[in-house]
Amino acid sequence: MRSTIVFAMAATLLGLVKASPLQSRYVVKETHRVPREFTRESDAPGHALMRVSVALKQSRFEELERHLYEISDPDHARYGQHLSTSEIHSLVAPSAESQDLVRAWLEEHVHPSTISSSPAGDFLTFTLPVSSIEKLLDTKYSVYRHEDGSKLIRTDEWKLPLHLHEHVRTVQPTTSFIRARPQSKTFLNVPGSVGCRPEPYKGPSGGGVDQVCNASAVTPLCLRTLYGTVNYKPRAAGRNQIGLANYLGELNNRSDTAIYLSTYRPDAVKGAQEFRQISIANGSISQAPNTPAQLRAGTGIEGALDVETMIGISYPTPLLAWATGGDPPFTPDADNPTVDNEPYLTWVNYVLEQDFVPQVISNSYEDNEQTVPHSYASVVCQQFAQLSARGVSILFGSGDGGVGGVQPGGSCLSNVNNRTAFIPLFPSTCPYITSVGATVGFKPEVAAYDPKNKFASGGGFSNYFPQPKYQREAVEEYLDTIGDQFSRLYNKSGRAYPDLAAYGVNYTIIWNGTLRLVDGTSASTPAMAGIFALLNDALISHGRPTLGFLNPWLYKKGRKAFTDVTSGSAIGCNTSGFPATEGWDAVTGFGTPRFDKLLKAVGL
Ligand SMILES: *[C@@H]1O[C@H](CO)[C@@H](O)[C@H](O)[C@H]1NC(C)=O
Ligand SMILES: *[C@@H]1O[C@H](CO)[C@@H](O)[C@H](O)[C@H]1NC(C)=O
Ligand SMILES: *[C@@H]1O[C@H](CO)[C@@H](O)[C@H](O)[C@H]1NC(C)=O
Ligand SMILES: *[C@@H]1O[C@H](CO)[C@@H](O)[C@H](O)[C@H]1NC(C)=O
Ligand SMILES: *[C@@H]1O[C@H](CO)[C@@H](O)[C@H](O)[C@H]1NC(C)=O
Ligand SMILES: *[C@@H]1O[C@H](CO)[C@@H](O)[C@H](O)[C@H]1NC(C)=O
Ligand SMILES: *[C@@H]1O[C@H](CO)[C@@H](O)[C@H](O)[C@H]1NC(C)=O
Ligand SMILES: *[C@@H]1O[C@H](CO)[C@@H](O)[C@H](O)[C@H]1NC(C)=O
Image (tube, rainbow, N blue to C red; front, side, top):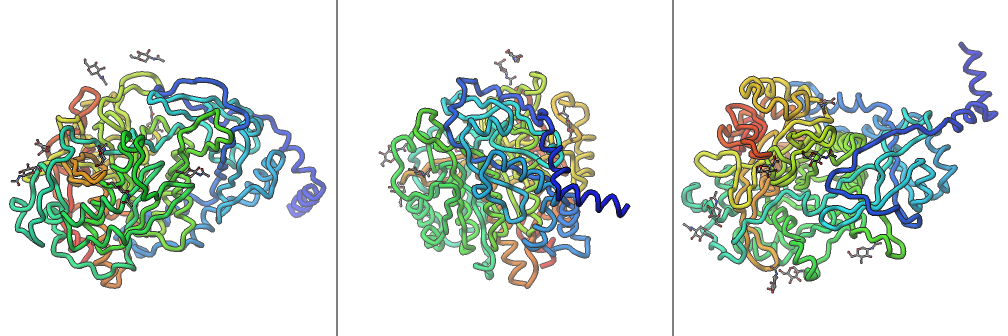
């Protein structure tokens, strides 16, 4: 035994062991079908610069996952003991062997001083011209054009030396056609609603839902009354924060937010100037007037909906808004185009490096899971697990096209076999985040559907991520209830979503100085984030840890604090889609929150 080790060390010193694997041949690491909305246009320009991330295998991810489930399980002794950054780094750091082998390979192609490493060493990042990356990955990149005219540089297959396959999770951008762009946002305009008259504010507490809610113009006062937060006075603002993620050009305009708050929540009007903005990868935090092109594209409608709804509910909880860039639409003939289009990864890796992260984060973006390569989805989802383990509740909207994908009217064709199928959405399919569906109607609330724009609350089952244990019982009961209906159209064994829901139709917003109405799980998600932020405020002010990753608590205990939604369905793909039922369902989860019951459920 001992002599073998000595021999191996000597061999390493002499370069013998390293020499042979370096010569191992390239073998395909990943093939991903180009999504049908993209057409190959030409070869990629060799000089275009791309920022490349290599994700190394995290040595002890299974252990991190075990910690995450323990600290999020209300019956476990460690419940609420969120992990520190350094504990997480030690769990995700790649093995020395992985680091040595991957670096040795990279340094044949990239100058070592230009490779930057994440704090845990699990991501190596550098910039190279496309022609050099093609050698590195033994592939050919192409320019692909989306139906909407925008372009991406990607490939449908890439290779790695065989000895590195077990050490590298993914290299991107390669096969990932993910784009957090307008069609990935989860809101829909209500036709004919632009410029309708703001309703005056009706006083601090104008009575019950019947008095304060107007289904044609939903305001913060209505939502706060409906879900019971209207009389709650935050006491831990500052120690408690709320986060909002904007991607690729979305922005939050302070003057629109100020008009909204002065109209609908006058006591919170300072929130419009107080929220903090952080630009990641040149994301836009511009307060300049929108350009004509931005006005045409509706840039900032999603941002307005998110920031106005969140402050409208959770003020004075400080709000932090990130804007993650990377998407000046790619133009191959520009002088020095840098192609860098991996918004979720760029964002989550930035946030993971911060000492303080807001305890609840709202994300109103989704992509069809099948447009995201499995390896990329897994890497992003594992990074979300780290954020969750630090005690952050990460919320994503469940999409607006029912069972049919990101938005209504999708083709409902599987990329795998070109058969009709329900189309699940990522990141909702990631088991370490909480997915939020939408409802409509006050007495009772039902699964959201709006005939005006075909908005339907999204729900479904992953083809990538197996069903986590915390939801197995609830999902099995649901599958028993709905029987064989649709059984050939979805994957029963996958992570099922959404987990819960909130109102999502006819939200009043101010954008470009004017009132309009929007629908979407993009409305439900910031509303839900605001409510959980207030619950965290209550916990912190009682000296308790914040909620952190919600799902294990939700499926075990939290579910009782939600009003079950039992009618309506996730209309899509020319079907009625998954129906709402008693108990958990794949369109509204456990239903909508009741703040008094939530306080009770956490023992306050
Ligand atoms: C409800 O809102 C709509 C649209 O803003 C408005 O026309 C209507 O008068 C409002 N209804 C009530 C009862 O205030
Ligand atoms: C949403 O508002 C429109 C007015 O713009 C109204 O016609 C419609 O009935 C409202 N939807 C619901 C579900 O109340
Ligand atoms: C950053 O974005 C601004 C405007 O959005 C653009 O003018 C500028 O060129 C970008 N900078 C880089 C380095 O991409
Ligand atoms: C934006 O506001 C300007 C000024 O009020 C107006 O002229 C323009 O039509 C608006 N554009 C859109 C898309 O709402
Ligand atoms: C996939 O199916 C659709 C509709 O059935 C058909 O129009 C299309 O040509 C098929 N595509 C491929 C690649 O087989
Ligand atoms: C169904 O989901 C499981 C993961 O739960 C996955 O392993 C399997 O490949 C999926 N099946 C299809 C047809 O995508
Ligand atoms: C915000 O949007 C308004 C239009 O509503 C525009 O006039 C203004 O320049 C934008 N920026 C700021 C800082 O208000
Ligand atoms: C739904 O039905 C319409 C009319 O028959 C058809 O044009 C469309 O392709 C169908 N869509 C899907 C997703 O099956």
